[in-house]
Image 1 (cartoon, protein in one colour):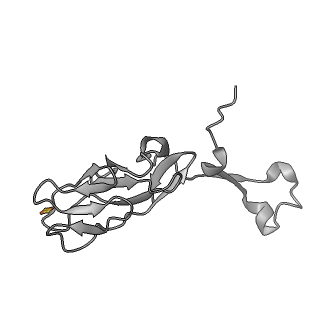
Image 2 (image 1 turned 90 degrees about the horizontal axis):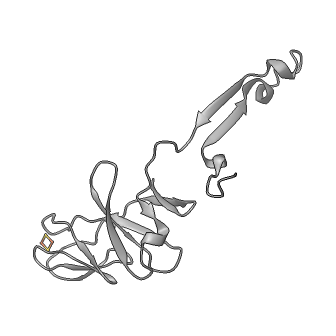
Length: 139
Ligand code: FES
């Protein structure tokens, strides 16, 4: 039975090296070498898109253990930012459409990490992510 969620086009790329260089013709198809390149394997998803409330955010950790905020301002749009407060480095927590720092009360918008109130001097730094098959991946 085929797994509908398995998209091998994002995982494996088979390359016929000689064919791409025009060397395979004289030797015949049987001599074509194949090189399989693993792409994306071993990269752990940060979360499933479905786990992020639309209009809200969740707190996750990246592979290095750093806290990351994932928000979904509109259905299907995922925004990621560090969860490290720009005031003195505490970890902010999702609270509906906002992110609240428990240390001194800074508040940010979960949609983009911009400042709402409090002593934090700058917005939360953006983190690059992308979505594959409903999962949020780093990078
Ligand atoms: S560390 Fe976040 S408000 Fe001070």
